[in-house]
Image 1 (cartoon, rainbow, N blue to C red):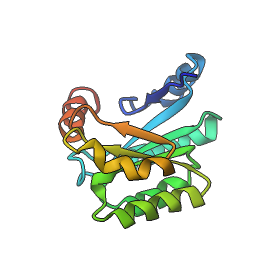
Image 2 (image 1 turned 90 degrees about the vertical axis):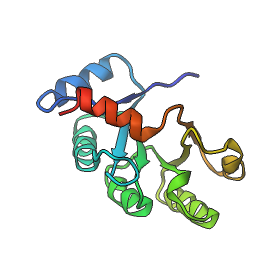
Image 3 (image 1 turned 45 degrees about the vertical axis):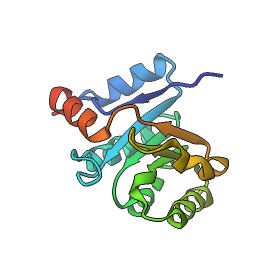
Amino acid sequence: MVEVSTSILNVKKGEEASTFFELEIAKTDYFHIDVMDGKFVKQDTYKKMLEYSSYIKRISNLPLDVHLMVKNVKEAIDDFLSVEPNIITFHLESCEKKEEVFKLIKYIKDNNCKVGISIKPDTKIEEIYEFLPYVHLCLIMTVEPRKRWTNFINRYVK
């Protein structure tokens, strides 16, 4: 079964409701929430994505797919758990030790949420092998998030 998770990163202020409803009509399966903190990734979408997620939760029954591109993963998990996401994906590179990765996986699951792990293009795929049996999703970035999102945001997001 194929599922589509549509990013809402470029939704314009003032057009949120119509855009979200149009995505529902188009049969998207999830709203993809790209959370950036200005530290792990140069751009900062944290507040905007939390605001949009809260809004979606009030007007839609579609699940949220939260992608955390942040330094402080635990804090971001706590913030985004309030919108009851279906899945939270965090970056392996945000963690200093593998014990931290396992703790975050457990913490997300303990909060009735699926968990995903993501790696940047330069991270060796072998680094995630031991975590795969414990996660629901693996996101392999094909471009460096910092460069990709900086160019995207500069072009489309105000």
